[in-house]
Image (cartoon, rainbow over all chains, first blue to last red; front, side, top):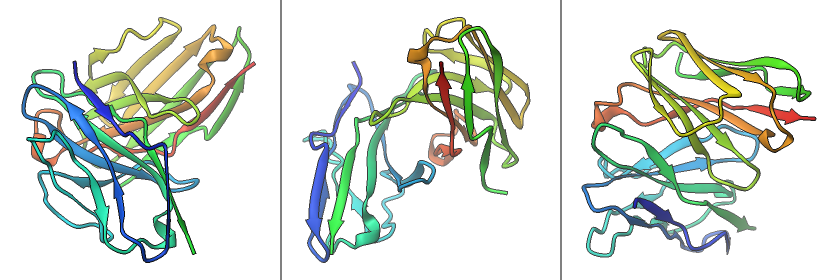
Amino acid sequence: AQRVTQPEKLLSVFKGAPVELKCNYSYSGSPELFWYVQYSRQRLQLLLRHISRESIKGFTADLNKGETSFHLKKPFAQEEDSAMYYCALRYGGSQGNLIFGKGTKLSVKP
Amino acid sequence: DTEVTQTPKHLVMGMTNKKSLKCEQHMGHRAMYWYKQKAKKPPELMFVYSYEKLSINESVPSRFSPECPNSSLLNLHLHALQPEDSALYLCASSQDRRDWDNSPLHFGNGTRLTVT
């Protein structure tokens, strides 16, 4: 069955420190992976998708099919990065549903 | 307009009430979704409409009844809800569920529902 695992509920780092939010997935087909972010009192919004191979707000994520991972990284965390981050998997066939991991709350301290 | 708009922002209803949640987007998206999010949990898919037709119902109880009057609107009709249905209900849209490369979800701010 399809599954997204984010092992850390809370990740706390100091400003300027590197940050890595872990995401592992389980899916036998070709996955499409996303990171969504929810800042305090704001809507859930797309941060990254693996097919774009882009860097948004300094964040990058690389799909590693061998390790079935899609970890989110940023070399220097900022206080405004504090938010809830959800890794999501969209699986194929006629359904095209999106399932979310349980989320990691990132807290960046000054 | 690049937003998904949901009304109302907050709703308190009794278990015998009938109410509706509304969602609107004017991005030309042809897929619309209802998600339910309990506190400190990720969103869970409830329904998907694709080209105004219900394509996915994730075994949601019949006290939740979705409706898609046109390509820009999505409603969720509520009747005889239970206190455990209290949650944040999120609407989302995407360009086309069949267009994998260009279909990220755009979420609304949600309706905070409390059932008393």
